[in-house]
Image (tube, rainbow, N blue to C red):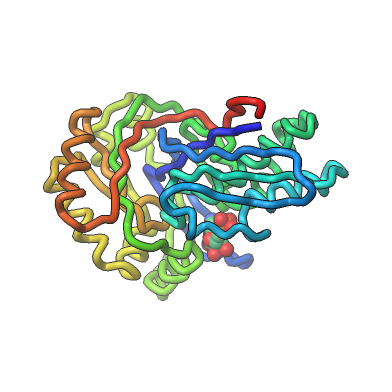
Length: 297
Ligand code: C5P
């Protein structure tokens, strides 16, 4: 059973103060983009995970992998022994701020549900996704959505098509470390309640790239730049290369550049590659569909 699952970019990531449980309330406007991992589930003697792709060696293959945890949690909830081999064909940057690990969790959940013939109700799948991580429910749902709470409470939002270039950085950034840096930078300041920007939602719904370029916002960007100052060079090179706007994707270190169309995407990608300020580029568009069963193995 093979499931295809998209990466995400946050077109707005408004971050509130740290909560007593350590998480932060968010107004998180997610857009799924056409950059995909595929997870294939096949019956096996025991739960095992393998991974292929350009960054496969950076992916943990033990029980900390969200794909493995998804199989375990679904098995536990439904009384099914999670005897399954999960193979991840990885194309989403690892630890890049594009929800690659979350994507694999959502994909494995859907693949195991189909393989085991469980037909688990959507609401329960979403509940398991939220247990796996704040971004996992969105990986299941895809499209465009506003995430509130710690990002797991989703409301779909309307979105036209937008074109993007992603600059993949060397090495990952730890999401908890970026949130800790956000807290450090925010110390002593009053942090407003996070709210979705009406102008941003209107631009998204209208498919208006110029308006969206002016409204893109990521409250984690100063923290990511503080931990990885060289990302400022990547952002500058993307802007100089013709992007309408650029920002750090989620907790980074991938940077995302909004461009007018596929032609502009190729130009901006070439400029970024030539600049030597990133490891690789990827071109994609969104909204893309959420986790989808492709084929029965
Ligand atoms: O939910 P998830 O496991 O993906 O979160 C990883 C880490 O990111 C959390 O342990 C927390 O440090 C941070 N986080 C946060 N507020 C959120 C989401 C994540 O502080 N809304």
